[in-house]
Amino acid sequence: MMLGATAASLAAAGPSAARAESPTLKALAAQSGRVFGAAVSWKQLDDPGFARLVADQCAILTPEWEMKWGAVEVQRYHPDYGPAQRIVDFAKAHDQQVRGHTALWANNLPPWGRDALMGRDGRSTATARLKQILERFPGLADWDVANEAIEPRNGRPDNLRTSPLVVAMGPDWISDAFFEARKYAPNSKLYYNDYGLDYADTASDTKRRAVLGLLERLRKRGAPIDGLGIQAHLKPDAQPFDEQVFRRFLRDVAALGYDIRVTELDVNDQRLVIDRQTRDARVADEARRYLTVALDEAAVTGVICWGLSDRYGWLRRSKRFGRHDGVVPRPLPFDDALKPKPLFFAMADAFRHATPAIIRKVRA
View (cartoon, one colour):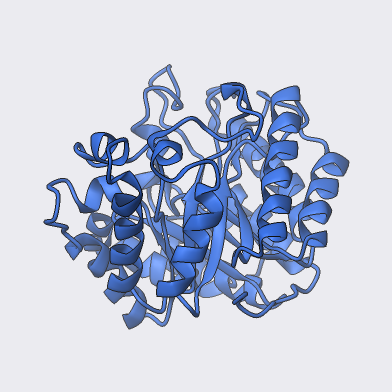
């Protein structure tokens, strides 16, 4: 029984049978030279069934929170790297890569971080954070050096998000961060990572132009950035998806010489009907349309989901982005019982038909 089998028949056979009889997502991604992976939290790896699923399906792992500044250094000068190290150790034991996430993100600062960044020693505070986290975890495949730093609605001519990082390091802070990061991660791919780049509405059009502008400026400065991370938090029936619009954006990014990673893929069913079968079909269709375009672009080198199983999906914990009717969200490839869903098979099919990826060397 391979990918042509129905999700229902595999689910009936149980998660072990489904894994044994279907190619894994990491194997299917590898056929076109790509990686598949997921974001995980260290505590989730204490669940033996989930840990086996992660080991089976993923070639790369992203720590969900464990490397973010606000999680690592709650008390200044006393960082706790234990949870992040647990994920790195798991990945090493299972021959997986790790994506460092994230070095600098203004929305996840430690309690003391805002005042420190906006003070006299703001720049040295930011660069010290870069040095500490990148040196503590050497040799990772990727690093999200700057995360969610573009916000056209803030009204700046450069479209930067107004934040303590701008105050600390100035308007060229993103470029400067990449130069700093390269000192401490000479062999890692370095990425700028952002959301809101997927759909054909006005806000997404504006965001895409702003991010392209940033990428062009970084190239002109010679910043050692390897690629763009597109988060891909998809929202069926909330915003219009236009294949040609998204395809053109990917080509524009690729034309600048950047790698592209889909870094936080999930499909939010918040606006969809309660009926599970209908919801799952719509979620799968949204991902299929999206990934068909993404994986037709050779510069797209991997897909990482923001979670692997609905058992631990972040949307079930989110009051803002989750469902408001008490129904458990189903945004990920595997369900609560760790069984593959229609989304899994849609992703598998997209990987099977993917254009071979172009893998570039690390940019010095």
